[in-house]
Length: 167
Image (cartoon, rainbow, N blue to C red; front, side, top):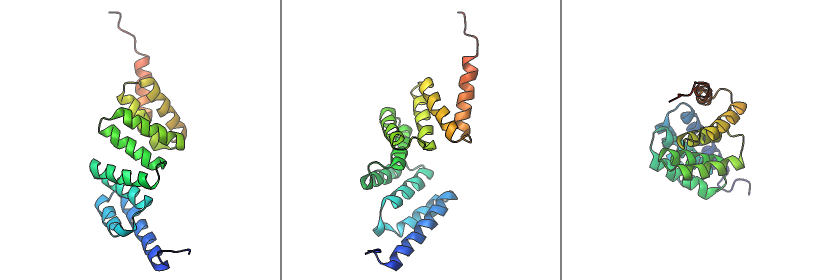
């Protein structure tokens, strides 16, 4: 059967997901969550990911992690969900766990700009500037608009060119 949930229900869900995604794009996180609430009986990977991103925007890490974990239950190798989880873990100071999630995501999709950015940030927080620079450089080859990576690399070049203290 092409539409096991019914033709009308399928298009209603699709329309609601589009509204939720538009609200998320406009940074209207609560509105996004309200649209998703109407789909509570229709939970799937897309709903979980949109919910995670809305909670992220509201800085509600516990709810964000819960939604990401549900998404990973649906698809344990979803690179977006792994990147989101890695970012949450980094924010919680769990850098080793963050790094593991982000590397797994990067193995699945090596051209994901957000994953590369998060890896660069994680290595920066681990004080591994060389490895951080590698990820930021790779990121800039993919997305030259990522100003955060450009700022890091410019600072690193500046610091490397400063004379060392003779003391």
